[in-house]
Image (tube, rainbow, N blue to C red; front, side, top):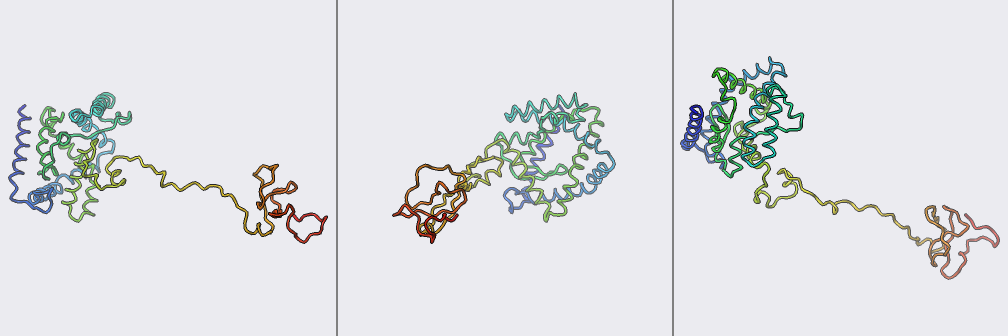
Length: 334
């Protein structure tokens, strides 16, 4: 109880200090009215990272075998699933909360205390929820962006929620104290080692690292809070199908009007040449012979004609074919 009271007091003190730092503000970004204070804290954290965290995490990642690092990450991740389950239930996501409870039970007993992530292989996905997200789901605004010493990017809402998150961490109740403190350091180094490559890339490509980190953090937290919730109406106004699908909602699109029409078989009409008396080739291999003769002026095959042979067209006023220069009694040219 004394530890929880100290954590709550620390969180309240941090929030109060942030509110009092309004004298060092910048109005360039409406989401970052405390930019002057935040940049100072960001520079301080960068120095701490360069002197302590980055070298320690580099040694950790270089010397320890990968399976040991995986086991450490799984162990603390299994402890984190306990608080994630509580927050999912507080947010009304009962199915996810019960899935997290099942993850903890399976990984604790079948995964050797959480060293092996058996639950993921059993199709129980891992979730990440904290009390700051829970407050956001309850309708609490994020407030201004804040950079905390050592802890890094946050918001006023998440800063107030930090003591509750610490209280919900099972590792904080570990005894003796030296084991608890050692675990806290190992967990911090393991988490820092997992993003070494990402931070190197950011250092290379980011023009203003502070702005890059701020915008990425705010966008990520917004997406976490808006998860499983409909987007506000003002975000969808004037949007198109691509914008709506980018927000994470799949849209059923009726593409019947966009499909090209299927090519229909074309009936070959009698050409003008056939009406003038020229010879035409008729391919009726797919057609059944008809007993009735077609109407006058249309091309037809005679009973003696075979598929693919040329026959003369009928004269509209006569039942005989037009003169072709052959003598009576001679066979019709094929």
